Length: 269
Image (cartoon, rainbow, N blue to C red; front, side):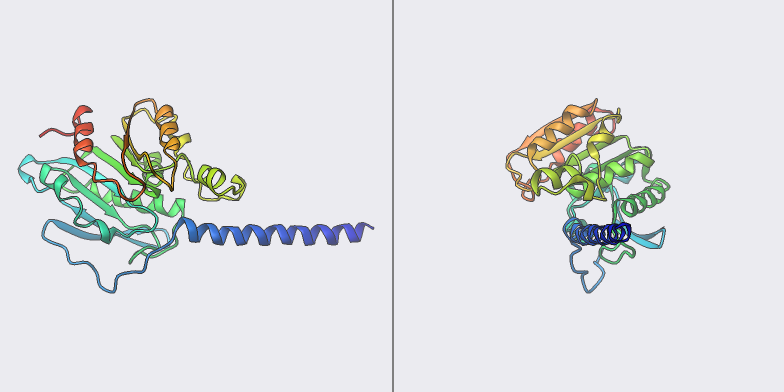
């Protein structure tokens, strides 16, 4: 009888492990749908510096989009983290308005994305962004006291993980979630226990005392706007702006962003 019980228990454990591994594989495909790598490296202008930062098990590609107002000396830096189905290549020419205002922007590619090596995960993305941060704050045009994390969708989780290990003067979270576990449970009805990369923004913002700007589309069909409202209600110093858009069609919020930075003494024209 005992032998039969142990056999059944072993079979049950194997079955549970198989289901968990199967879900983990599916989770990775959904959470990190890596786009095809462009056949050639992007052409960049004189205002862009391309570099590589070392991370455990490999290296990550990074681009510094320099401020186009060098006469101002050291200025703010925005570390921008993109969505899960994007590459930094898509964003190399999207921040000219901020560059013209005197703001530099750092793009760090996620491990396993584009030309970066490694495997994407919450931990490896944090490591890549932290390595990019460490390199960028040493650049002559960057004021280390005015580094802002700006993340869209999955990127919101990425910059919150960065803020756990590096000093960020403020956060900008666009179209992002309370946590991946909440998205899995509330939208896909997946048990929270099965989600490994949680990116728990809600828990982090509870104790984050610096300014947070939260932007979200009223008609977002991927991440409900209710999650943005929960984030705003949790963060001690949050500004919430609901936009008339969905998830991927919101206009660049640069005017709102510079106004937010100005209000908190991080930028001046």
